Length: 169
Image (cartoon, rainbow, N blue to C red):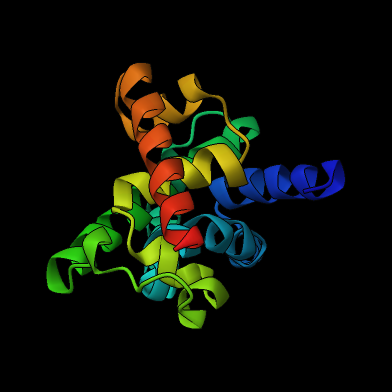
Protein backbone atom coordinates (compact mmCIF):
# COMPACT_ATOMS: atom_id res chain seq x y z
CA UNK A 1 0.00 0.00 0.00
CA UNK A 2 1.38 3.37 -0.96
CA UNK A 3 1.67 6.23 1.54
CA UNK A 4 -0.97 8.15 -0.45
CA UNK A 5 -3.41 5.24 -0.18
CA UNK A 6 -2.71 4.93 3.53
CA UNK A 7 -3.27 8.68 4.02
CA UNK A 8 -6.51 8.47 2.05
CA UNK A 9 -7.75 5.67 4.32
CA UNK A 10 -6.90 7.64 7.45
CA UNK A 11 -8.67 10.74 6.08
CA UNK A 12 -11.73 8.68 5.19
CA UNK A 13 -11.75 7.15 8.67
CA UNK A 14 -11.68 10.59 10.26
CA UNK A 15 -14.56 11.80 8.09
CA UNK A 16 -16.58 8.62 8.67
CA UNK A 17 -16.08 8.89 12.44
CA UNK A 18 -17.44 12.43 12.22
CA UNK A 19 -20.66 11.08 10.69
CA UNK A 20 -20.03 11.48 6.95
CA UNK A 21 -21.93 8.53 5.44
CA UNK A 22 -20.34 8.95 2.01
CA UNK A 23 -16.91 8.77 3.62
CA UNK A 24 -17.98 5.57 5.42
CA UNK A 25 -19.02 4.03 2.10
CA UNK A 26 -15.74 5.10 0.47
CA UNK A 27 -13.76 3.81 3.47
CA UNK A 28 -15.37 0.38 3.30
CA UNK A 29 -14.69 0.24 -0.46
CA UNK A 30 -11.10 1.30 0.20
CA UNK A 31 -10.58 -1.33 2.93
CA UNK A 32 -12.18 -4.26 1.08
CA UNK A 33 -9.07 -5.38 -0.87
CA UNK A 34 -6.90 -5.04 2.25
CA UNK A 35 -9.31 -7.11 4.33
CA UNK A 36 -9.71 -9.70 1.56
CA UNK A 37 -5.91 -10.07 1.37
CA UNK A 38 -5.94 -11.08 5.03
CA UNK A 39 -9.15 -13.15 5.16
CA UNK A 40 -8.86 -15.20 1.97
CA UNK A 41 -5.71 -17.20 2.81
CA UNK A 42 -7.02 -17.94 6.30
CA UNK A 43 -10.69 -18.69 5.63
CA UNK A 44 -10.07 -20.11 2.13
CA UNK A 45 -13.41 -20.86 0.43
CA UNK A 46 -15.17 -18.93 3.19
CA UNK A 47 -12.90 -15.91 2.61
CA UNK A 48 -15.71 -13.77 1.16
CA UNK A 49 -17.85 -14.48 4.22
CA UNK A 50 -14.98 -13.60 6.55
CA UNK A 51 -14.31 -10.43 4.56
CA UNK A 52 -17.96 -9.40 4.82
CA UNK A 53 -18.05 -10.12 8.55
CA UNK A 54 -14.89 -8.06 9.02
CA UNK A 55 -16.37 -5.14 7.05
CA UNK A 56 -19.52 -5.27 9.18
CA UNK A 57 -17.39 -5.27 12.34
CA UNK A 58 -15.39 -2.28 11.06
CA UNK A 59 -18.61 -0.45 10.23
CA UNK A 60 -20.10 -1.09 13.67
CA UNK A 61 -16.99 -0.30 15.67
CA UNK A 62 -15.45 2.60 13.73
CA UNK A 63 -16.52 5.14 16.33
CA UNK A 64 -14.54 3.20 18.94
CA UNK A 65 -11.31 3.69 16.96
CA UNK A 66 -9.47 6.21 19.12
CA UNK A 67 -6.70 7.17 16.73
CA UNK A 68 -7.43 7.06 12.99
CA UNK A 69 -3.66 6.84 12.38
CA UNK A 70 -3.86 3.24 13.68
CA UNK A 71 -6.61 2.33 11.22
CA UNK A 72 -4.76 -0.40 9.35
CA UNK A 73 -3.52 -2.23 12.44
CA UNK A 74 -7.01 -2.03 13.94
CA UNK A 75 -8.59 -3.34 10.73
CA UNK A 76 -5.95 -6.09 10.48
CA UNK A 77 -6.86 -7.30 13.97
CA UNK A 78 -10.57 -7.34 13.13
CA UNK A 79 -10.01 -9.13 9.81
CA UNK A 80 -7.77 -11.71 11.45
CA UNK A 81 -10.28 -12.36 14.23
CA UNK A 82 -13.15 -12.80 11.79
CA UNK A 83 -11.16 -14.96 9.37
CA UNK A 84 -10.03 -17.32 12.13
CA UNK A 85 -13.57 -17.47 13.56
CA UNK A 86 -15.09 -18.31 10.17
CA UNK A 87 -12.31 -20.81 9.37
CA UNK A 88 -12.76 -22.59 12.70
CA UNK A 89 -16.51 -22.79 12.11
CA UNK A 90 -15.89 -24.24 8.65
CA UNK A 91 -13.26 -26.67 9.98
CA UNK A 92 -15.81 -28.08 12.39
CA UNK A 93 -18.21 -28.58 9.51
CA UNK A 94 -15.70 -30.20 7.13
CA UNK A 95 -12.44 -31.25 8.79
CA UNK A 96 -9.31 -31.66 6.71
CA UNK A 97 -6.59 -33.89 8.08
CA UNK A 98 -2.95 -33.69 7.07
CA UNK A 99 -2.92 -37.49 7.02
CA UNK A 100 -5.37 -37.36 4.08
CA UNK A 101 -2.84 -35.71 1.77
CA UNK A 102 -2.61 -37.11 -1.73
CA UNK A 103 0.46 -39.23 -2.42
CA UNK A 104 3.69 -38.07 -4.09
CA UNK A 105 3.30 -37.15 -7.74
CA UNK A 106 -0.37 -36.20 -7.43
CA UNK A 107 -0.74 -33.21 -9.81
CA UNK A 108 -3.75 -31.86 -7.92
CA UNK A 109 -1.72 -31.02 -4.82
CA UNK A 110 1.23 -29.52 -6.66
CA UNK A 111 -1.05 -27.32 -8.75
CA UNK A 112 -3.30 -25.95 -6.03
CA UNK A 113 -1.86 -23.99 -3.11
CA UNK A 114 -5.35 -23.55 -1.65
CA UNK A 115 -5.57 -27.30 -1.20
CA UNK A 116 -2.38 -27.24 0.84
CA UNK A 117 -3.58 -24.31 2.93
CA UNK A 118 -6.92 -26.02 3.54
CA UNK A 119 -5.11 -28.85 5.27
CA UNK A 120 -3.62 -26.51 7.85
CA UNK A 121 -5.55 -25.48 10.93
CA UNK A 122 -7.01 -21.95 11.01
CA UNK A 123 -4.46 -21.02 13.70
CA UNK A 124 -1.59 -22.15 11.48
CA UNK A 125 -3.00 -20.34 8.43
CA UNK A 126 -3.42 -17.19 10.53
CA UNK A 127 0.18 -17.12 11.72
CA UNK A 128 1.43 -17.85 8.18
CA UNK A 129 -0.56 -14.93 6.78
CA UNK A 130 0.60 -12.55 9.50
CA UNK A 131 4.27 -13.45 9.12
CA UNK A 132 4.65 -14.30 5.43
CA UNK A 133 1.96 -12.14 3.79
CA UNK A 134 1.66 -9.19 6.16
CA UNK A 135 5.34 -9.29 7.17
CA UNK A 136 4.77 -8.86 10.90
CA UNK A 137 7.39 -9.96 13.43
CA UNK A 138 6.69 -12.77 15.93
CA UNK A 139 5.80 -10.40 18.76
CA UNK A 140 3.27 -8.45 16.69
CA UNK A 141 1.74 -11.63 15.28
CA UNK A 142 1.51 -13.11 18.79
CA UNK A 143 -0.20 -9.98 20.09
CA UNK A 144 -2.79 -10.06 17.30
CA UNK A 145 -3.41 -13.76 17.85
CA UNK A 146 -3.63 -13.30 21.62
CA UNK A 147 -0.94 -15.87 22.38
CA UNK A 148 2.55 -15.69 23.89
CA UNK A 149 5.40 -15.08 21.39
CA UNK A 150 6.73 -18.60 21.96
CA UNK A 151 3.37 -20.07 20.97
CA UNK A 152 3.31 -17.96 17.80
CA UNK A 153 6.84 -19.12 16.94
CA UNK A 154 5.99 -22.78 17.46
CA UNK A 155 2.77 -22.45 15.43
CA UNK A 156 4.71 -20.77 12.64
CA UNK A 157 7.32 -23.52 12.67
CA UNK A 158 4.66 -26.25 12.59
CA UNK A 159 2.69 -24.43 9.90
CA UNK A 160 5.72 -23.98 7.66
CA UNK A 161 6.81 -27.58 8.19
CA UNK A 162 3.33 -28.89 7.42
CA UNK A 163 3.03 -26.65 4.39
CA UNK A 164 6.38 -27.77 3.01
CA UNK A 165 5.56 -31.43 3.64
CA UNK A 166 2.19 -31.10 1.94
CA UNK A 167 3.56 -29.08 -0.94
CA UNK A 168 6.38 -31.51 -1.69
CA UNK A 169 4.14 -34.58 -1.41
